[in-house]
Amino acid sequence: MRAMERARLEAAPDAHIPLFHACSGVQWLNDPNGVIVHEGKIHVFYQCNPYGVEWGTIHWGHMVSEDWLHWQHAPIALAPSAPYDRDGCFSGSAVVRDGQFELYYTGNVFITPEGLPDGLLQQQCVAVSDDGIVFHKRPDNPIICAPPEHVGQTNHFRDPKVWVDRGIGYMVLGTKKDNKGKVVLYRTHDWTHWEFVSTLTESDGTMGHMYECPDLFLLHDETVLIFCPEGALVEPSPRCAGYVIGQLRFIDGAFVHGPFCKLDHGFDFYAPQSVLDAHGRRIVIGWMPMNGKALGKSWAGCMSMPRVLTTRGDGVLRQHPIEELRALRDREFVVRDYVVDADSAMLLTAQCGNCFELIVTIDLIDTDAAIVELHLCSDESGTQKTVIRYDRTRHEVAFDRTHANGPIDGWNRNFGEDDQQGFAALHVDATMGISASEHTEDVPLWDRVRTYRVQEKHAAALRWHIFFDRCTLELFIQDGEAVMSGLVFPHPDAQLCKWVSIGGKTAIRDMRYYALRDPKTI
Image 1: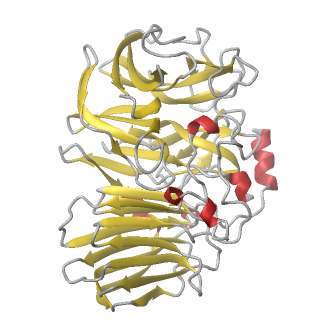
Image 2 (image 1 turned 180 degrees about the vertical axis):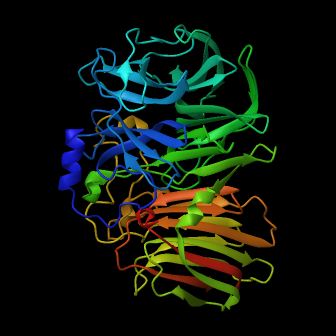
Image 3 (image 1 turned 45 degrees about the vertical axis):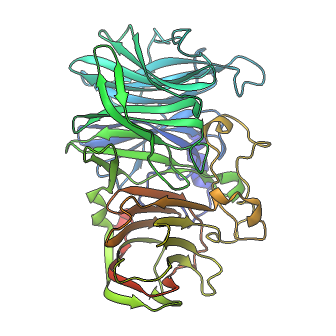
């Protein structure tokens, strides 16, 4: 905690630190853990390294909010201190039972000098607290030492998500066997002895070699299982967060489900965890990773916006921004029934700002342009810009950050195969920032441009709902049909926003822009 305080005192002001996203503001941050709502307060625990901006000695940080907007830092909740977790308190979850907080996590031990990638011993542990602030590790740790030998491996056996159903405790875990990822289910009646129930889903060889960060819940009478398949042959990235929907028979753990679907089609969204709030909403947040060291930052990573999950019974999750975000709206700018002429541009606003919300409806019947582009965070010359593009022929939305960033040295570098250090090498390898310099061509195309094909190909309208918070961009498409998230780091002066219509005219039916206030001011 002293290391975190020193880092906050020594950190230089940074115009890219998000205003309303949950963020530690200093040092390394990764997976959200133990997301829980209790007595009107939202607790988000998270993986952190208090000693630097790179993955390292993993502790559990802790943030608290009453509205998902205002965040207060709480003391470090867990630190490596026991023989079973001496090399890291890895990801997990939280429950409240009989008024007591319980944090379930993976204790990590390096059993070989090199440690990574396979010299690990991973076991499941628990810590308890009466006040939700100071936690004590249970004397009977670890509570699960290993999966059944025919099911999984002790060196990749992690990320317990725990919940209570009619007095019975359940846990899902990620593991692997024979280089195929799996999610397994455990059950307990006394909260001391956990029994293996079943393998809920596993890779067929194309869907990854390890399944991380599972989360299972009921949503409108359907069972949703979220997980992150490492090494899956899912275009365009070998790592992503996704889900399957089906029906789980709790008595024996039989789970019949549909195909894997991506939860986010952008660049930076991983290790999501959900919670059922006091209003009955299923809310999910994920980790937005970045290479803080390469960016020259005193911090690395933040959480995504909270999203409400819904389903229509068609096997697809819809995601919607939480209503609480409307409290941040300040200035409003409205455009209706405007036509952007062929091969021309319309300036939306001279100063879009660095924290805004934009809601757009494009009339596709009256639009005959081949390509429609929205340029955000653009400079006067247009050389720096973040582009949201729609290709009418392909029915495809693109998030293009090839020229998104300002002059920060080194951000075309990322966790490469040759220079990865620590568990981040196993955990995520998405590019955390793209250079607008002459080195852009060194960055893979899939880390510059991500695409999503709209499901309703003959829709009369295209709807975008965009949030930008100083460096985070999250695009909701077609009323939550899909989301694309990514980090960009524009120059503070790059605040222009304009439309470009290529090969025809673009009919904008309705567009609403809101400047968003700093939560500290409301």
